[in-house]
Image (tube, rainbow, N blue to C red; front, side):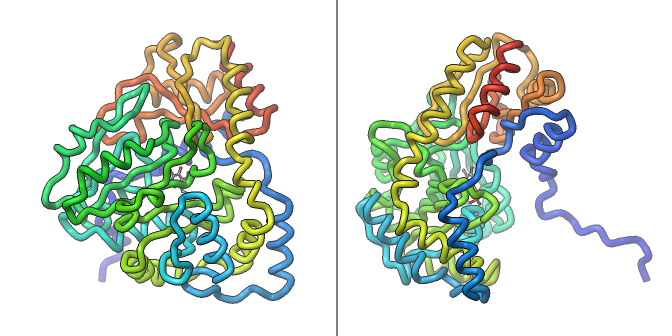
Length: 386
Ligand SMILES: Cc1ncc(COP(=O)(O)O)c(C=O)c1O
């Protein structure tokens, strides 16, 4: 009999602890102001919390239906229709998931087969690639260049192959804070219309968009939505990232496949939170409608406070992230600069290169401004001193 512990051959050998966990730990260790990980340091709506307590006290504490509680799916369907002009069927086209992360994982698992190619745009959110790898898929990455981070559609077409199965996009985009325009969706459609290629559209920051035209959803594109999965997160919208409730909207045939994965991944999402979210969507729609103004005020006061620093700030059209170029301050690579910033200056940020598989030799860091005014001003004070 073996006495040594068995060590499995890793299915994700190149993955370690994420930079978000590392930077948050470093921030704590050095008592730094943490603008690294993307979560608010203020609380979500009182009404939502009260409704959660209410439903718990009323005994709504057993399993929810696998696809999500009906009241929530119906509220989501109405909201989607009002915002994007497409009324998904609440029974067959909306699935409530354990955060957007689960929806992304379930969609990728349902669609990607061994050898399939998946196109994504770097810098990209870190949960996509591991899910693709675990399904035996192959990532094909198009690196977007600062400061505009726009897709070069010619280069995109060159990445397409008979094995391309899925395109993953994210708008408003973490970390570049850029947004897709309708013309981007039109170009995507032109490129893939004749192929059997699906689209996974990560729209978790849909309510944090500052452009005059507002957020462009894949669901507003009449052809693309027939082959798209749109992913949303209540954690982002209601400042409650710890609740981990999200959902995806997809045509019935696609939703059926996603639900097969969801059924054995989590089965169902916690019941009282879903009921509370359904109440919130119906009772206070102005909350998400007012979110752009809420975050615009934070962005503008942070930008104003940083105006006398040596950082060069990039435009922020959406999300609660701001990119800062530190070329005038240091020659360090971005990972070393972020460590130095945390340890010596007392502000934690995220280096942009960690969102890219290929070399990304720019001196850019990501700062999260989903923070109280006092936190942002204190961080800006420190950043202005270097
Ligand atoms: C682009 C993007 N997608 C998905 C997620 C995950 O959302 P959730 O917390 O609802 O799982 C995040 C969270 O930071 C994100 O930034």
